[in-house]
Length: 80
Image 1 (cartoon, helix red, strand yellow):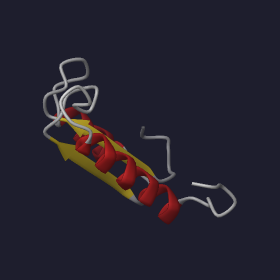
Image 2 (spheres, rainbow, N blue to C red):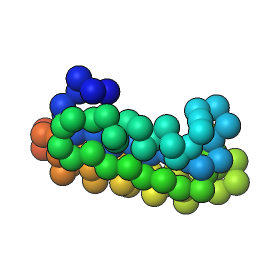
Image 3 (cartoon, one colour):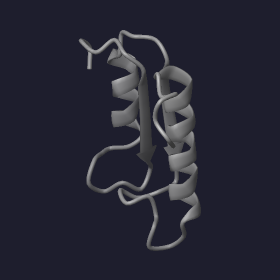
Image 4 (cartoon, rainbow, N blue to C red):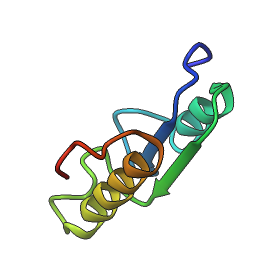
């Protein structure tokens, strides 16, 4: 991560039992990212974004990810 200078969006769930501990691991990505436009989204969700319980967490993450990509990457030619 320390060599990557592009935009960085990290989404983590505090109940993620596969990648952890969270949100500490996500915060490390942000800490060691030397580029601009680093953003961390922390939610009370598991590794699969709580899709087995509700879709709102996944929908929010998708919306925030798309908003981030539109803001910091050249996606005018991509039909989102």
